[in-house]
Length: 212
Image (cartoon, rainbow, N blue to C red; front, side, top):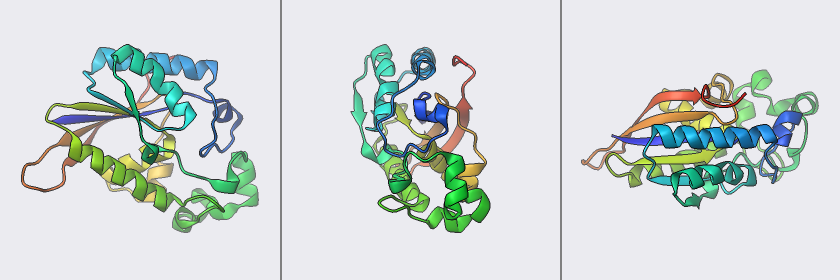
């Protein structure tokens, strides 16, 4: 079995302010940096990580740096693991989005909201396709007993876990809590007959080791 670890970046200033980040180059807070350090120590103590992949957005890179130092592994940046591009909605507060643009609210509208594309952005359906392609490519590249850690964002991780568990986009986004600095473990069963690897969720949103 191979292991795929998905970790969410540490807390940012916009997380704390309740603002929609998208691809904005937002920095971690002091708490977010502590979460990244705790994540690094936990991963080093718990796993034998062979490869480190990170979204190329700043907050993910900032989270990956202490992990890379602790593991002695150089991170590979991959834009496929970016957060959703929210286009012109970037920077809005979540409450403001719900009030002004209810068509994007999964809780209020359901499936149509998952297909709604913000101006200059992408829909959640498009994000899901992008992330699943990235995960499948990574799974195909895994060697037996290899462990890969990906530092990413809330939506990509939720959508990836949701696909494994058979959830639609709305369920995947609304029913899976994922803390800043949380880590999820997936077991990848490799096959030799040309079929796609089988992926199973082992643990999700592991945060008990992190600073609060």
